[in-house]
Figure (cartoon, rainbow, N blue to C red):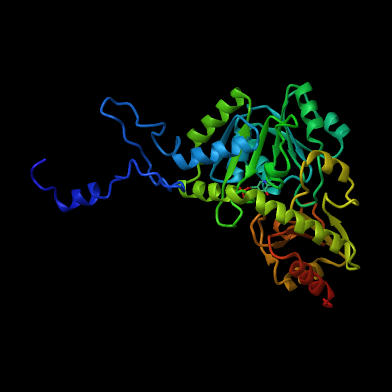
Length: 379
Ligand SMILES: *Cc1c(COP(=O)(O)O)cnc(C)c1O
């Protein structure tokens, strides 16, 4: 090319990616929507178009699949998009069993959107295997498990429920957001699908929204992959980069958070202003033995407490805390506290005097003192 290109053209060509053979230690953020083809039409690598796949997403998917002992993982732009993809993989007319205290947005998704697509559901007390068996219908194709549940920390026996599902030609999906594969591997326990809101512990710093689905079965995998690519609720490369960075320290954070949570739970359990503490690591938890068997190496860093008092007094105590920020969400390095009932609405079964706590990585002495202080003030 002899003549010098014009300004506009230089602006485009001079900023093209030139660093083909450099090897950065940390994965760069691949902010490219599309990938070059060779002159014979072949692609230079696996990547064509970023909705279909991109390097940052491929890294996160491969990593989460290995950590969950699954064959395939698919990343989504939120936990709800991942969960929605599982429901979209069913067929019209199918019936679903959901836990009676399921994450409230999932129930709302069923009620407001999926019912119109002729998917029906029943809410079941999943702590009781007999109730699960009784609720199965001929068209039940999916049993959804959340263990521990949100916000009452009820546990479900994943192996037993997966077995019931399989005996009835259904599949079992587990929302493993609260424990992560550091503490619980549902696929090893017989589940067919694991979902995560990677917004929580995987991201770990309250700065990204994401989700993923992990599966072993090739047939289910094909369906989820199609929904991911064709519905297009995919995470941006930067979101994937943040989640990939989070994965590097996931085990350190959640183990420390879980240790803190157990100590805080023990302190709160003995406090006269606390009516009840829901935490699977306490011997007083009705399913403590199941927690020990099912949750390999830890009890998690989420707990909830019932305050001796009404809704106003409960919220007043939460607002006295200095190191527990009043906010929704969980799993970040900072401790959070939330009055769940006022988020979930009047028809939620959550008690008025319940506070949900996400324990962070701060020093446990400060966290305990903070509660001691908030509970000592006359509200
Ligand atoms: C937060 C959460 C979700 C929803 O995930 P988003 O990333 O907010 O869409 C689903 N399940 C559980 C258990 C959660 O905590």
